[in-house]
Each structure stands twice: as C-alpha cells, then as structure tokens.
Image (cartoon, rainbow, N blue to C red; front, side, top):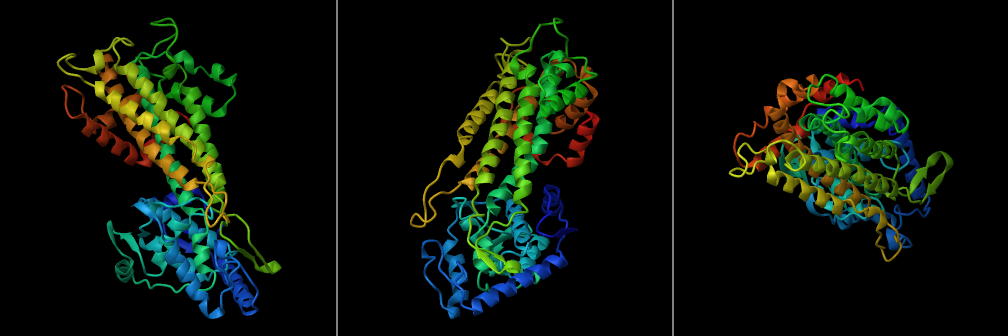
Length: 506
C-alpha cells in the first residue's frame, strides 16, 4: 500500500502503483488538512473576497468578476473549453501516473479542493481506469492545461478512458466499478488543470525505462567488446579514478566485473595497442549518460511532490497567492538534458554496430553474413540504426529554448516542457531499437569467436536473448528480429536486471 501524504512520494512508489497495481490510500492527516483548506476557500467566497480563478475569469479574463450563482458553471466551462488536446493519446501508464501525481499534489492541502476530489482521483488509480489524454496541445505553462482538462473530464463522467485493455466512454467504466461523477465546486476545476503532471508523468516513465536501458546497454557493450576482442586496460580503475567522475568509475567497474572471466577480451599489444573510441570510451560516455539520468531523477523527485497549481491557499495565514508554480521550466530543462544522454546511448551503440559489421574494421565475416555476397547479413540493420540515431539528433533539439506567448500575451513565456518530455520518451524508444540491433550483431560476432569463451555474465545474457532471436544462418526478415528483441528489452523482468547488476557488484 502507498500512503499519499503529498510530500514523500518516491519514484519507486510510482512504479509499484502503476506497474504492479499496489493500492493507494490518502493519509488521514492530509484528508483533514485538505478539508480545512477547503473550508477556508468557502469562507472567502462567502465574504466576497476577489480571488483569481475562484470568482474571476481566467488568463486575460482575470479581471472579470463572476457572480456567486455562476461559480460552478465557471469551473465546468473551464474544463470544457480547455479540453483542446489533439493527436494520439498518451500511453495508459503515463495517464495513470498523471492521475496519481495530481492526487498527490492536491493532497498537500494548498489547492482549496474537497477531499472527495482527491479520493476520486485515487479511486481511478485503484480501479485501473486511465483517462484518454491526447499528447499534443500543452505549452507547459500555465501548466499542462489541455492534457489535464481531459483528465478532469473523466471525474465529471465525461470523455473516454482505458479500462481492462479497452477504450470506452467514461460512463461505461464508472458503471463497471461503481464510481459516480463529481460536480466541481469553486476553484476545483482550476486546481485540477493548473499543474505540470503531463510533462512530469512522461518524464517519470522515461526515467524508469531509461534506468533499465542503461544497464542493458552496458551488458550489450560488454558482449560487443568480446565480439571485437576489446582491450580491457581501458577499464582500469586507476585510469578512471584520476578523472574523478563517479558515474564513469562505476561504469568501468561494472565492465571489469562483467568481463572478468571472459576468454575473448585482450590486453594492450596482444592484438592492437588501442581500441576505437566507441569501445575504449564506454565508461566516459555512458558515465556521462548516467549523469543526465541522475539530474533528471533529482528534479522529478522534487516535482512529483510539488504543489503546482494557482492560486494557492495558505489558510493558516489567511493568504491567497497568485504565482507561477505551474511553470514547467525545471522539468523542461531536465527532460532536454536527459535527451542528450539518451541520444548518446544510441550514438555510441551505432558506432559499435558499424565496427561489428564493417569488414574493413574487423576480422569477422563481412556484415556478419553466413554467406557474404549471396546473403547481405546485418548490412541493412546498420542502416536502420543510423536512421534512428539521426532521428534522435533532430528530437534532441531543446524544446525549452522555445516560447510562444498565449492568452493575449498575459502568459508571455512558457516552458514547452511537455514537448521536451514527449521527445525524450520517443528518443528512448528509438534508442532501445538501436541497442537491440547491437545485441543481435554482438551475439552473431561472439558465435564466430566461440560462445564457450564468453564471460559467465554475458553468456547468461546471450542465452536469454537467443531465446528471442535465433542465430543468423541465412538472410531473413530482420525487422521481425529487431522488434522482438526490442519488446524483450522493454519487458525484461526487473528481477533479472537486478540480478545481473548484483553480479557485477554495483
């Protein structure tokens, strides 16, 4: 069970809820605080105090005062008018994370909503109901208005959801699980849609998937080292200690431990004096990729426990403050930064693929073909990898440097953080395919060298991957192999990855 307090949710908690179905419960103390905060809002409304978004219009309409009898219509109109998302929907997992994070933010008790609203969000998560939320349409300030409006529609019994693997109207799913639509009260519509949960949820899923892919890329690179008789001195502890980057030292240690009993790696001067950079600089490059990952983790951990709507109600001090916590710049920067790490994972992997297939760069059969000339082998796999890497380079352009004014120039600087997060996830999916191609080529190369000489760890990894993709004995439709291995990399059990990490000592 995950207890929502609003302030101590972890990325691991999110994983347990969304990927493993662990139930969520609102902390009693926070329920009390939420209700106290709500009573303060109702008192302020009764006193005719002017408060943005509670009894005024929104954005450029902030100076328009709304009559008391229209306050509920104001919130309903807000959700309807702002539900302008377009394009394909977010993955169900991302949508579920959005709901969980929105509940966590509101649970802090600064947003002026009823505890019933927080509970309804939690009910969606526990029932496995994920709102259908279009991916495009957010500027990343005033938060993720369009995506979160589609989330809010579901609380009203409107819109569409995913439930038990099917897309359906919300009313049908509610009937199946016994939920009932809510009517939004003053402030509640605005509290639901002012926030960074679309970009943050996408960032969380990217983070969780990247962690696994980083480890998989190291195991794949280790097998490539064996396929190319790589030189082990490049991973010497003293070499990396004098550089001083922790992540670099850790990658080098894992490479040493992974390959400690390999019969296929070599020493300086045994075959050649130095390897190409794509082999020799694995710790330096992958270590830097880990640094982007750790930076993103730090910012995401803060943001999943952040209060990001506007205005905020500090009832203990009788304050209603209009600010800009909805601005997504911290997450926009984090996602643009992690994109660099994702791009370089693919970039250096593609260069290793080239070294595996190019007969001018190795002593293996040309393009790893079982019958060079008559059969092309892995020739076009490298083309596909190069294409994915090039696409990543265009997606890696920072979204956060762009801004287009909106709401009649009232909202004159925005973060584009959701675009950054969406691009990061798209790049990660591209990179997983590149790693899959490298693994296919590395497995073929070590077969020519002799799989009995593999290290114990890479041999175990080889055996598991070979159950997914068989050896290349003749040309076939390699697209099927790439997609099958990509799917396996994405779905490989966490426990398997953890066991492999523990075996290498970090």
